[in-house]
Image (cartoon, rainbow, N blue to C red; front, side, top):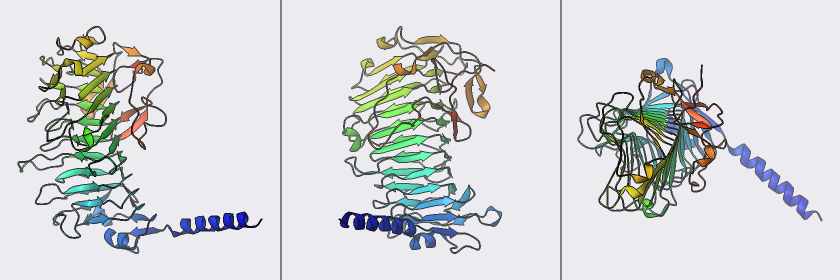
Length: 440
């Protein structure tokens, strides 16, 4: 009769013990640790490493963390705490990582919060602020990541069981790469099973894409992605993407192409660029996409690559550049690979080859002087837009576990500058694009 009670008490004591083990380790002037790496060496599973700013904003220098412990939180006390990698070669040789924060296979459920990270470079030109190597449930939040070879990089195991649920949120990621080097460098270069990018501002690569992903599933929601040196998004192939439903979902983003882009002017590429292929669909729902120069919005380049556009506002910002294309296709694709309805296109767009768009979309909209403050990145509509519809008509695929859409539901939020979110004003019918229309 007493055995269940004893077992219950034992379990409770074990629970209390496990809670007591977690500690907070403090780094900074007058704290127990002077260096972040020293605190990490002492840390155990479940611990939080709090990093205080140095006097006069001096950065922590040559930080190189190869994280192999799980459930470790690295948190800046008063963001942003600066970390500078200059003077160190992030080679990946021996114990040295290829990033300031590198999370290896055993380092599940870790997070990096509130840092400004810059200066990570190596001779392979892929030194990164953060690198995720087959670790699951890694979160990077509230960080300013700039002037590294790469911003954030990740990779999986090739079968879709690693690098699950990478989360990048409330970050500014910009000016990564080097104008002096010949190869391509990206603000985000992702791989593995699944990645979610939310409420971020991502912009101004030196040479390369703002977001490049070889992940099986990528969700980008409520972000401001703009002024890349090449494509804004490049969703391409890997061993993970040969699995069915290797989708990319873009919801409620503001995507702005640089009119003076010197590289590839396509806005989004979905398909193939190496020896594999991508078997999935690109879903664009309720995005505001500004294409101010001759360009293509979507390029499909894999025989199993498809696209669905619903509720997007796509225009040239009143520049009247003309010759805009909704989509172009590789040799193995044709116009049947793409569908669209309830979208609004500016005057420069026409696509006679895409029969499925006729009668279901609005063409020829004059998009000039329609946004609150473009120079400040405020693309809220300043006047009513021509189409709206019930949100229930928009189909979104179910993400692979454990990824979920925002618990309040898609379209409950909209991007707020800088790198934030705000509630989308309730509407009986959804306004086209990334923002609701609210009459002042």
